[in-house]
Amino acid sequence: MLKLPKSFLFSGNGGGVLQGTTYEAILCTFTAARDRTSNRIGRENIGKLVVYGLDQTHFRAVAMTVDPIAPLCAVAKEYGVWVHIDAVYVGSACICPEFKHFIDGVEDVDSFSFNAHKWFFTTLYCCCLWVKYPSTLVKALSTSLEYLRNKATESKQVIDYKDWQNSPQSSISEP
Image 1 (cartoon, rainbow, N blue to C red):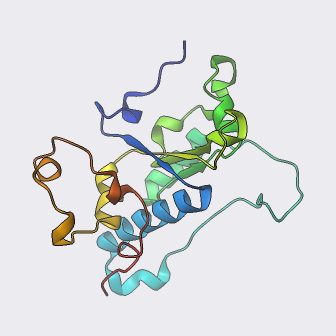
Image 2 (cartoon, rainbow, N blue to C red; image 1 turned 90 degrees about the vertical axis):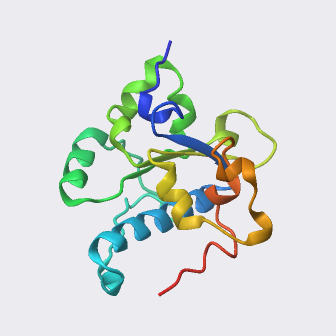
Image 3 (cartoon, rainbow, N blue to C red; image 1 turned 30 degrees about the vertical axis):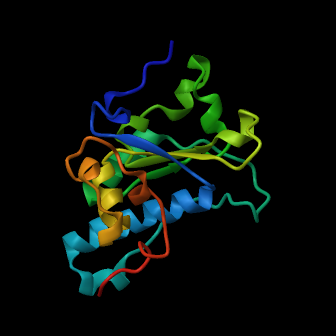
C-alpha cells in the first residue's frame, strides 16, 4: 500500500483542497509563492521575481519527460525557490505503488497538483491541490471581510476553504 509522506497530511503541516482547474491551482500557488518571496526580499523587489517552467504545455507538441524531483528540490531549497509539481495527468497514476517512483522526492515540494478528471472519470473538471504549508496559501488568498468571519474558523475548529482558492477579493494585493 502507498504510504503518503507525513508532510502531505493535515496531521503533519500539509493540506489539500479541490480546485476547479489546473489553471486555478497554479494561480493560487503562484500567488502564495509570490507573497512568500516578496515578504522575504521586500515588496519593492517584486519585479525581480522569475517563474521557471518546463517547455511542455497544451500548446506545444513535444515528448513528455519526467523530471527528477529530489535534485530539483535540493537546488530550489538552496535558493529559497517555491517548487510546484503540476502532475496533471500522471499524478492520478502515482496512487499506484508501481508508479510511485515517478514522484520520488515529492515530499520536498511546496505544492503538488493533479487532475482527478483525467483518470478518475469525474464528470466535471477537478484539480486536487496539496500544499506543504497551507498557512502560506491562506495568507496570500485570505478574504477577511467582516461578514465572512465566524467563531469556528477563528478558533481553528474547522478549516475554512474559502481562503484556499482564488477569488476576486483575494487577487487584490496591497502595494
